[in-house]
Image 1 (tube, one colour):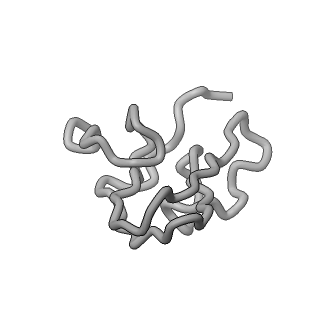
Image 2 (cartoon, helix red, strand yellow):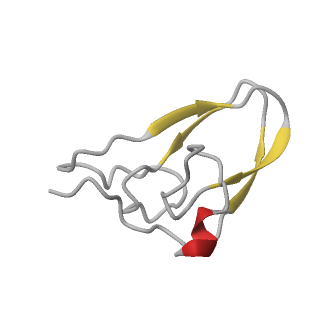
Length: 80
């Protein structure tokens, strides 16, 4: 079993986040509903990340799973 997640995508995914709303970010990279969890991590060492928006705003969610600012994109995908 690997500690490195699969690359779920090579571009971030825009989300109009709503204050107080909880989102489950896929950490394994296997989800077919990127960047959100669909349960594909079952049987792996990965678990989804719970993230709650602190205010209404547009965010870019990481799809490559290499960001240092999970679940938000930090531009790491540009170096893959």
